[in-house]
Amino acid sequence: MKVAVFGLGYVGSVTAACLAANGHDVWGVDVDTAKVDPITQGHSPVVEPGLDELVAAGVAAGKLHATTDPRLALDRADVSLICVGTPSTASGSTDLTYIRRAVRDIAEAAGVVVPPDSGFHSIVVRSTVPPGTVDGVVEHVLAEVPATDGFTFGTAMCPEFLREGSGLADFYDPPFVVVGTRNAKVGTALTDLFGFLGTEVQVVDVRTAEALKYACNAFHATKVSFANEMGRIFRYYGVDSREVMRLFVQDTSLNISPYYLRPGFAFGGSCLPKDLRSVLHLARVNNTDLPLLAGTLATNELTVRDVVDRVVAGPGREVALLGLSFKHATDDLRESPSVELAERLIGKGYHLRIYDAIVNPSRLVGANLRHVKSKLPHLQRVLTDDPAEALRGADVALVSATDTAAIGALLGNPPARTIDLSGRLGANVEALPGYEGVGW
Image (cartoon, rainbow, N blue to C red):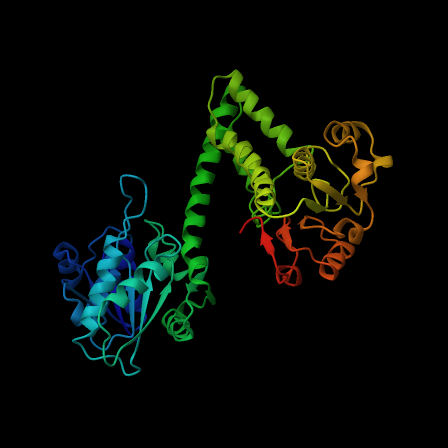
């Protein structure tokens, strides 16, 4: 397969050399001769362990080339990979100037070169770009350039996950290979292109692929900041935070796992809110700022407020709340975000009916009873053990309960709107008219 790689910085150079090493005919393109010339001479333009040798081998084998002329790269090419820079603007937005330029270069060069035998060319963004870039920028630029005889374009997003210093290892052993496209031909082309990696190519929605890289990098930044905040507070108590984190990462059931990483409703219960406030108190008494953890409480509050706002923005005053405890399979109401949600909606004059398969007011005791009495003193009046009764006449259902009775009643008599607080109600519920996911 002939591949054009636009942008010969870190990502482009690693991508080009690795593809060439595995038999593809790769042409790197860059406007900067300081990047093109070293590759032409058999050297890497960037410092990366093992890359210099890989570039030299690719050039010697006649599989790796570099040029400032897009036409040489596009002649008979099957795929273009856009690996150009996407720097921040002064306001923090992403500068897509180089993306636009690369797409325009591809489209214009296609007008004067020989198309591939298939007549189909895949334009694939590898650079990190905001969701909507392929649809709103790449496709728009292609539409501006006159149609080219012999070339049909398909577009995609295929994010890279290369760390500087371990780029070659990361390329050959990626966490996943994700292609965002609506064009089956592009999906097939990239499956063939990356087939030597032995990793399943997952074809997803374009915007999902664009968002994935941001989610990964934001989480990595969050982990670094979290570990540093733990170190900043625990040092006042003679704690070796490195030892704490050594033990911390051994928990692959909760700490380092998919658990808790599904967009849904706010956290609550008897542990997380209380202990987070305690850590923040330790910080205050030691005059230490922990903005990440302070922001965690703030964003939890915003999650509850967002659901209230969504209810208020819609029509009707009848609300069914399916699920009241802070999590599935418990009757613990302490700091349950659903209790907070119920209190706010009642306070705004909404008529609320609540179903929970487990919560029985007569069996609540201790702090659990005291909490719900302070928030919902008339719980007995609005609580029912029949989900169909809770849903009768409802304009909107707020659903965190996932028991069979709740789901069955919801499917049997769906209201005009269903807001999924759990993020795991399943395809049948998601197919209902008026379905909304909290994390969507």
